[in-house]
Image (cartoon, rainbow, N blue to C red; front, top):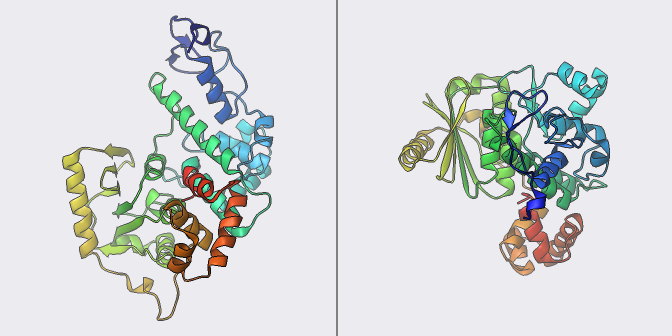
Length: 379
């Protein structure tokens, strides 16, 4: 990068409305941050505005193509700026009538982009784009919606969001970044490859252990997903509803008399442990990971099936959409014939699925369809 692309070194800038100084930054990086958060332009040398205080540019949203109507996407972008939001706060900051906020919020909740906050059951939080947007694309493809989200735009939105988070974390003390347990776990589990284990000692409304988007993402990618809940968790109505849904996906939770720790373990390579105040702690230490993995295996082996979750004879589980499975096998390099044998269907059916997926993913070849599906987190 040439020297002209950088702001000359100087003392840290105090943003208007921000409680901490921010070091001079690269103009290109500033434009990246503006793009993902939909912010108006600002001058970091003058310090007239703060990146967390700027308003959205509606023209950016109108041209987005991630699969949401303009108002819903505006609200989603705003909600990504902090952990929890009350409806009245959103109405004030968006300058919308409360009824319009509720309408957009209902859309986002129905699409799995917004959930109840685990920290405050009267508030809402945005589900991380790396989890929510691939799920939105998968549903749109399965339901044959028109127009469909554009995979390239979803990939761009996720990448820009990740870049924005990095910029915020690098600035001073990382103020404004979302550090709640659900966000940390969503960002980590999106990188999992083969195995996810949940240890659940208590029911928390809106908690990560009861997140359908996380489960859906893991199953789309063909991961092994296991959960051990303490017996008291099953007494909560919403927890039991979630357990029934997990059983329909053929991944029912097991029950233990007690579970000593709230944690998510990913591929045996990393974990997130949640303390009593719902604060997440990322674990990468080999010794602590070994202990957690051993604990999880022991509780899983000793855990018991819940009678109410047992399938009745002849009852089928909810099958993953065939196109989703075809894409995963395609990405693994299998031929149409091999995929047809694996799924027990005709080669013609597989080819039709591949052709439909190529159109939905704007791919020019089978290889590109598989690669793009993997790139955007669809599989």
